[in-house]
Length: 121
Image 1 (cartoon, helix red, strand yellow):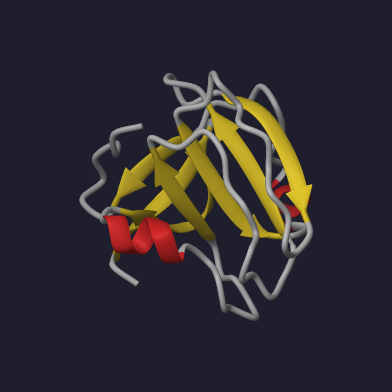
Image 2 (cartoon, rainbow, N blue to C red):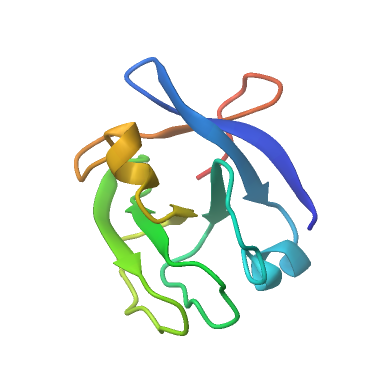
């Protein structure tokens, strides 16, 4: 998968490492086929996702243009999510990760790439 390493940060606290889907191929493949997910997968310029080809259920956070979490859902395998029209970025993680991280609607998330710069949303 072609993606680059980043960090999810909220209120100065690192939630998890993340891979950012930087190319069409990485966006298309996503997390399909994986049996365990470490950290998170970030899809910029995205409003909806599906879990076809997934082997594990996932947590999904939809972020607005400012990085605010506007919706979170858990999706089982082989499901099609509804578009979230105000979303600009999607964050995916293994089911239960958001609860462990304390991630919830209203949090502001920064996606910091490995050069400590904030990645585009």
